[in-house]
Length: 68
Image 1: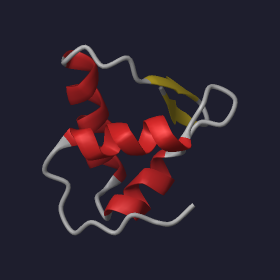
Image 2: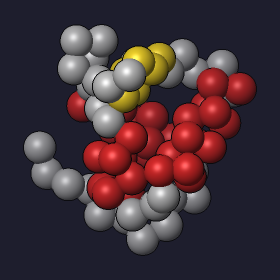
Image 3: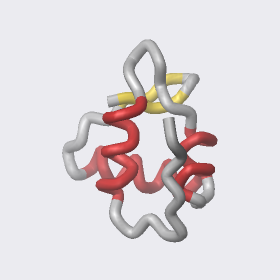
């Protein structure tokens, strides 16, 4: 899959779309991959995921990463 190069992720929607298109329960996307593709810290990824969850978006997680 092609990497998404973003200087700044202002909207969590881009990360949600990435997770929806890339991940599944059997193949979650690691925090490191999201961090690298969007050029943000792993802590910023966790913050964006939390924002999405607080808004009612059902992003799941496991030891291996995130999935939708």
